[in-house]
Length: 469
Picture 1 (cartoon, helix red, strand yellow):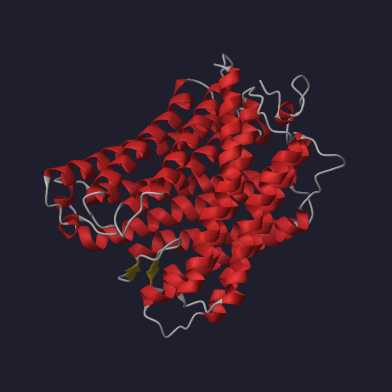
Picture 2 (cartoon, one colour; picture 1 turned 180 degrees about the vertical axis):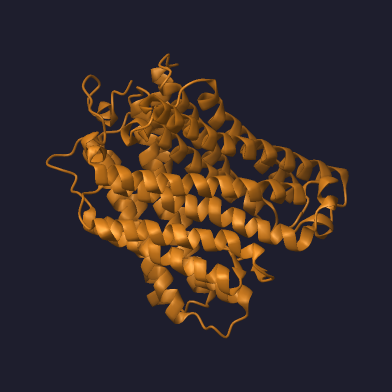
């Protein structure tokens, strides 16, 4: 199936980007499986909360729910599980299989802390009344249990990054496709280190005397921006890896690919610069981080996405059953991420176009990583996902999210505000109701597609387990 990433440099001969020997070591395999399980459980949990979240914003249906408080709590848990925990888990998986066996104790400590923190955050909404705080990047339930869980998860994330730096392997002599992919993964670890340091700096510098909304918004602003570069780098690696695995010959040399990764990584250092150049509570601090993210990522994303698209078009349709789910995930990822980027240019004011933008972008990253999980399943000792369900899953998830963000963009044009639900939305006209109804329909379809990912992966695991009995 796979001609590999080296096919971008050599149209005839290619190698598998990350050799199977990296995950053949029992320690690495078990560790990678642990991160995969944490990610799957986070997605399943977020799906449960997402069902209630979408219902709480869908006209007619939302009147059956205690909308105001329930919406905010469901949104917080859904976002933190489906974005923060899921993406950190997949970073843990990829950094584990691409790293060395150094510092195994630290690696397992990171996984244990992240799992414990996730459990506390997921249970916190059911353990008493706490105030929801709709902060950007990491919304929180302002209560002891949730914040303790987030702190434990943060310590796990810091341990994961530290272990990633210790276990990072060099790209090797000469620069081939495998080395370029390794460079991208190593760059994402460096971006993760910047994010961890930024969160630490904010904890020290942000005045605790601020009200909860302002405090958490500023606290997560710098590190949250840095995290976006981690996810972007992982997505670019996934796009190139999946393209090679489906037989596409991407018209980028490994050296040019590394240059793109360097450009994507360079902008993350605007975040530590912002801490030195401006007060964390100032408008200038926010603007430095915002402009770095807007300008830095696009420089690398546009050329790589175009090159991958050209490679896919040249390759044509594949008949390999193992390649079909990978191709579906790759195409859906590029479309959703591109839609999110275009919507970002249309943002004007604080309305639901903002969540439309980041839903497209984040789901684009998620779809790429879903495809990478499908690709890596055999390397982790599981069966490769095949069949109609595995092909339809990314298509359904992507199509649902596309409808979801179209509904939000439509409604945003009429001024429907973000982070509100039910009567607070003040839907005054039929077009506003139609737009939010389309959002609800797309959201439900996307939830089904997301949960189907868990089903497809679980089936592949179960088939292997059954074959061993």
